[in-house]
Image (cartoon, rainbow, N blue to C red; front, side, top):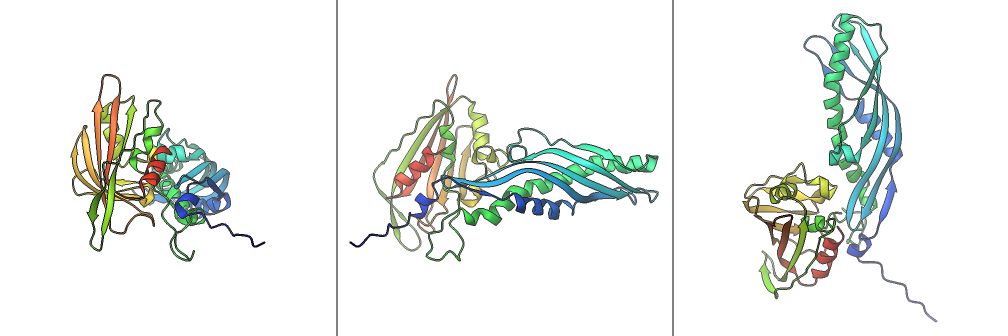
Length: 329
């Protein structure tokens, strides 16, 4: 009896499942390469920098959950620093950073902690260089740490994301495929509602696309102005997307969420009550050059704020995919 070979999962389905990749050895090499380039200068001839990465203790992983790539890492670092004092003395010491993690780098849950020591015999010139190291090396190191999550995704994201193309030689389908409504599943009062208001037609430059409208509602125990900022402020968006974002909340300014998985432009803003955006999903299932319109309204009550996301122009046949993505967060 002939057997039937199962068809492979569709990319959107395959990317929906949890996947994980340990990248700790690569991360140690990245830190060793990048951190040893950090050097700063004083007002005169003083200069100091990271000489060697002695130890990186911890795990670094990249996960994919429901089409979104998530960096997972928590490391303790020991670094050797060295420099030259104003009188020509060679100075060296040790720097321990107890925690370099996703939570500090992207979520901003706490500040970095630096534990310093100096090996060279103390003198006024040595002490001045030590002070220079403690004041100027941390900002330079934190600038490097800020690049680390994107470097993980850029290097290893293609290994977790299934492409819709016949050949895996091309660029994989972008991992981000959820809308800002993803935050709605976290509050206890979240209530999701999908509403098809009847098909419409969105006309692009090449062909017409039959569309419908999807609406999602959620209630948050937070003030409307705080939620408005959380949804539009480039520095706060990664708190709920756990991915890089670009956002300048002003009319006609472009935005990008989930590392480029969702993109568009701001159309209008009426803080803290409403903002309107064009919206496109970077996915093989989303029509090329097609933009929907996302209207986000915030209605503040006495003890909570109701947020409504109305996405007009969702291509017919994608309602369940969009709704499933929304329910995943």
